[in-house]
Length: 421
Image (tube, rainbow, N blue to C red):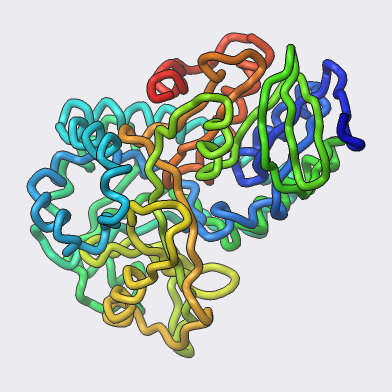
């Protein structure tokens, strides 16, 4: 037996992964009377959760599998568009995912999946606001909406289906013309002809800091946080054997919320990889003296989001389907820099090189939340795509209800792991 072998008592539960999803699961279960141990190789929120757009977005309900992608297949196949790129050396491994993805690129499936995303985002943002108050993180929050901007009228009309989805989801939005855009954000270049203002969008000025505020609150509740790398997982009798860089533990209940690293671990107990990795990048600019941007903007025709944050103006790129550990390919963000300069008077680049993150995504754009199909006392919470930061709290409530075997507050079958693994 390993020298550091430990057996945890029945009221204890271990969570692997201290991104937003794992931290929220830890808080929820600690509040419900469990003694929670949260393990990650890095500090809270220091992996993918640190580099996102920092938007708690009620409007991010559109599935990636959109009908309009079918009309763009020749361009997408040639990697001509900035919002969606494929790494062709990885294509054979991606093919099963792509086939399922393309099968969903129709109006009926798009609307159905969008409503299922909305069913998670609405309650999750409400719980976030409670957590922000409880963790004393209000200084990180801006509640002045977000702008989806269009340079080309044809692109605006192409997105009519998304606005239909907004209406079905009862998302509070307004349509702005060129003059109204200028009135709202006078320092934007007057190249945008239309905009959709998401009135209730909430932005976070430092996503990593919010994760750390939540983690501090978790510790104040009595939770344990350990920094260690998980390397092995196996089942022994009625327990899980977890090997980390600090030793070996035997735990009765286990939640895996390791994001893009989850498939690697659950493969050791016989589960196939259900996800594709969307790698994304960001860089940070300063604004020219006297110029300000007051809310996040999404330049649809140029496929970037720019968000005013504590560290400067963060600019994020589109999706790149690629193997998780392939060498960095920041050309996607480098190509949009001239488009950023067209749109807003940015000044200096503040990062020596772009940040890179890995977003695990399913063909239906829905996360994987629930009990592992073939094992007891193991729950999975991953594959949130772009939405893990927003969906962390509702994921936590769903997982906690499964752990306690209490009724779910919303229908959850659409998110179950057994649909893919």
